[in-house]
Image (cartoon, rainbow, N blue to C red):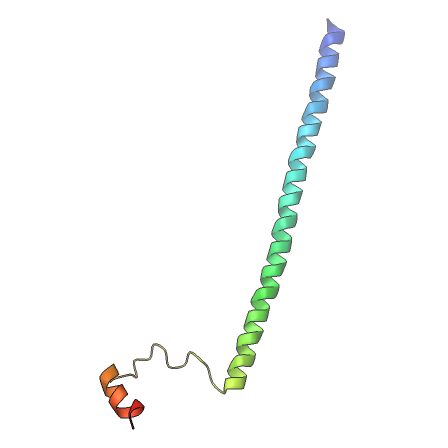
Length: 86
């Protein structure tokens, strides 16, 4: 009876070890994916910031400078009459 318990215990340890290695493999794979996606995201974000900086320099000003300031105090009809139909 003791030999059967020993064999079953050894088989149980083998399966627990395989399960542990499987879980560690999944965790390592997920961390690898997170690293590479994060690296690509950081490169993309840095490229976007560099692009907007070069764009603002090429245009001579910030493209979002007039948005949200409330300096537009005329209606579309007034703007149309004043600037578009000269």
